[in-house]
Length: 478
Image (cartoon, rainbow, N blue to C red; front, side, top):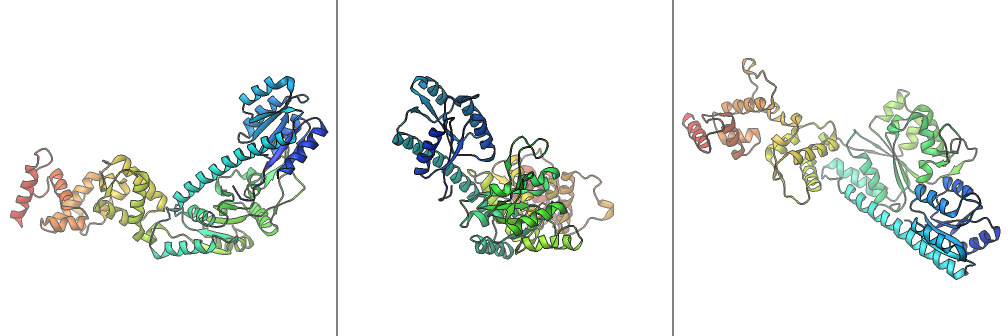
């Protein structure tokens, strides 16, 4: 919650004198006050504004204060409601409290009494918002810690984040899918002076084309089929904070034109409205496309590109910063299994380092989570990795097989067995050299030699003597 947060209170009463008195009282304690004569007009007000507090009379024309309470708690569960009632209807007010009302005030009421109730309601609202903010902050701090790496390229990104965090300059983040573009946008927002303001992430590629304008800029009630109530857009909802337009290159040229106008004029016009609303919001955009090439080929507006590309940040792909893979992998293990001391074997790490990661960090996350789920909860070995990574054991061995000895089967165990056989033959049975070339420990190599009956050993089933026989047999052949 921001320090300049101002509570809004909606007063609902069919007597103008009561509304005027309540307005004076609410404004005297620093609240913004809205008025409604009936429950129906209050609900209309709630469609366009979301007051923090509602002070309503119990007896209203057509719809009672209790019915209004029910509607409010369904639509705006965090809004606190107090009931005003005469002496003869206190039982009804108590019943209303059981339905979610914060308190009740008897008429005629004293000014100090009403002030006290309103101030207590304000305190609860502030506590709820503060708790929500703290939860969001903890979650975002955890997410920001995932920007891990000491490579030059990722350190350049982090230095840029530090320089931009307290500015309102438009930023364009480019890079392949899964490189962490949204994490960088969140870092710019939550590590700077706007951290307590709203941060709204919008996936432009997932918005329904016919509703994009409504989602971004809002709409008036009845402006199109299905618009049963007025709705503020995401730009208004992010007022004072940051809006993150992910995959902005997916917007149609028509929407690009409207977005450009919003960025230039700093105001939006909701669908179906003739009035424009001023906005104050920082824009961070992202795309996995090359937007400069896109505008050169006529698929993206050139003027919008330059409006967004005031400060460009390019996220490196994971294969461009392979040196960060070990640190990232261990950090992910700690995130997914914080209470367990799980190690990654050399063979598994060699597979991780050799893979090209087309899905980047997001794919690495999925890979580590899968390995933890399928492994023995003590180590992550190559066998725990997805098939596309385990195949590295075969692809990165030094000597290719002759055409006549290539395995006909594509079973991964066959690939592994033939890879070990090939390396074992190349080094003339030297187990230390074979383990080094394969990127696995000597103990793991012995286990696999025994498993596949390579080097004079017998396949699994003969116990530990099989390993000894394999060692002795290979030594005599050297």
